[in-house]
Image 1: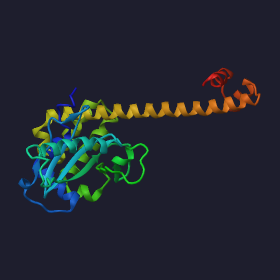
Image 2: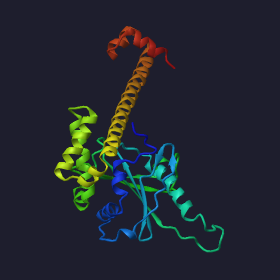
Image 3: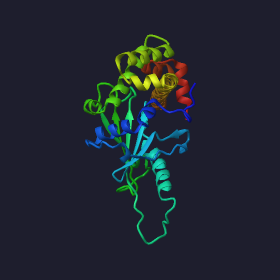
Image 4: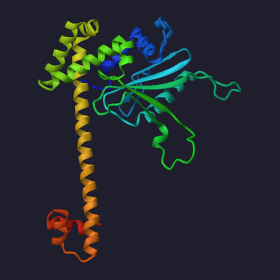
Length: 282
């Protein structure tokens, strides 16, 4: 089992390469930078908050970009990115005085998530930090917007066409999922790796990093499946709780009107014992 705190994701392994990262940046922004040296990687390797770390951070053309890969949707990315960007800015101005009369300039931030989970189907969406504020009145005094791009096969076609590495990564993930439906996960990952190498998909990368790619892929897929099962269980538990709350309100209301447990049970199509429990609940 791979320890997530110390192992990269496949996405991060691929795009830690400057040329691949520059190609991804160009595809998103419609630019044509051709010198990877213009891209300054500033990822904080040791910036881990509650087991989470930023995948990639870099500066280009006086802008700071935070790229994150997610296989499970979370609306909390703006809050997570707030911690990341604070750590980035602290590092960038560490040797400067914030008490001087001169304004300390900082690169403008941009937050992008690359999503390849199976739960959300949109090509693109935006989450805002202000969505997490309780009792917000008026305009938020602090805002942070995160754009998420769906990079599954069949989504954001133009983006995937513009970035070959991203397109091939999406194809690899799709193969793992396809094979995992009919065989053990380890065998599915190995078959996907072999198929990709045979077809020239991420060929050099997979040949060079075969053992680590297989180990990380198994961990990532396992984690994705476990989180999906957890969300399903949470939804079902919440749905059941909602049904119980509805039944309790109906049972207690009808009981106050003098109806018997048997009559209420007949209306709700449940047992009399269940009705008695609902009536007694506070």
